[in-house]
Length: 186
Image (cartoon, rainbow, N blue to C red; front, top):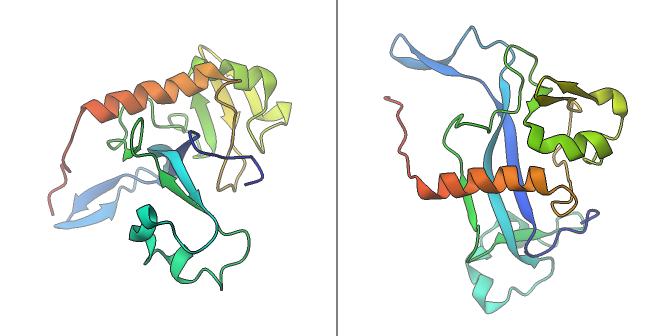
């Protein structure tokens, strides 16, 4: 809410992941993947915002959502972002598909190596929580970023940074064209 997120805006979700292997017939963390990686795993284009009750008729499917069921007990502000019904909608990327791993190969998970499409963010340093010049550096054809240790959301203005916005749009379009099933055997 502090960043003015509204309908048409795009969430890009990332998280901390570690590789898994099958060991003795069971799924286990790969011991060679000590630090894990930050990986972009999904997106949501905001269609509607819910911050008060009662729900409009077209959003009654949210009635069992925890932020609705416990609306009165939730700390304020309490807001639900609902996916757009057309356009980019919402989806997930296949595991470690090209261009969604943020962590620099061989580094600690918070040391990112971003594509040169993020150069305007490097130059202006207006990714929320990352204004400190010391966090950014040019690395070959990419952009090195020491991401803050904790953060639920990092925000940038896609209109101000069309290269970074386009980078994610390209990956969303590619993911939307392909459907992949899980390759794990359990």
